Figure 1 (cartoon, rainbow, N blue to C red):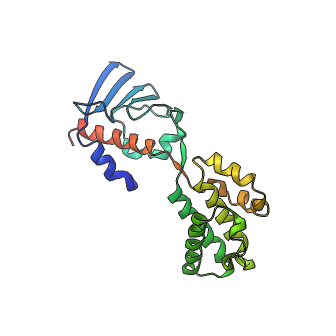
Figure 2 (cartoon, helix red, strand yellow):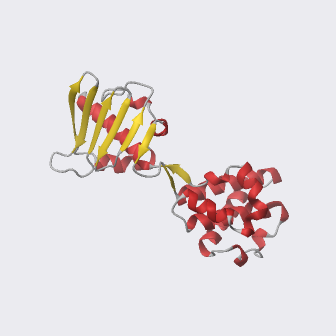
Figure 3 (cartoon, rainbow, N blue to C red):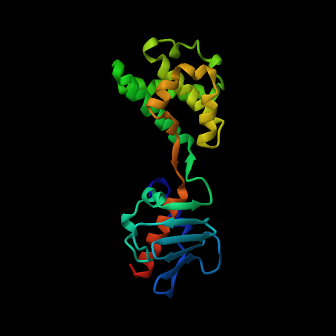
Length: 226
């Protein structure tokens, strides 16, 4: 469950799981606190479908298995579960600045490795680019800085700076990608942008899918008395 596990454990520590069997094909799993609907979730399982609703949001899933409350949810990853999602109350993928900075760092390390830069040196350069992107909001303000003037690293560091610039003032992936596409200063970086799929930088799966999988696993353990 990654960095949010502690949050889930605290959020759902008082939740009680109950199951109703409506007919041979339909089950309702409710996971909620006895005294509140806060963070409550209802899972309806019917044939290969899962309908989720409640205080945690809503979604519809069409799976390739027969989901029940006691299905082996430990084997279903959040990303695989999300692939089966047919409708969701928000965007399935969201923009995360921390992930964007990590992705940019990895991109700089991978690119400069071809020019015999050490990983330590590449990380130092990435850290500086991240710092500058947070301080300055346009390429003209930094293009003459020494860090950007060496030919072997100019393009990758310039592209990284401008991508972070766009991400820092955006709320969605589509928003920052449009800003990059419309920025004339980025024109000589566009080939690498698409060749290296840099438009995916900072994009991660909505936390909701991980949370629902956590709830399904927790409810199952509770109902099985584990």
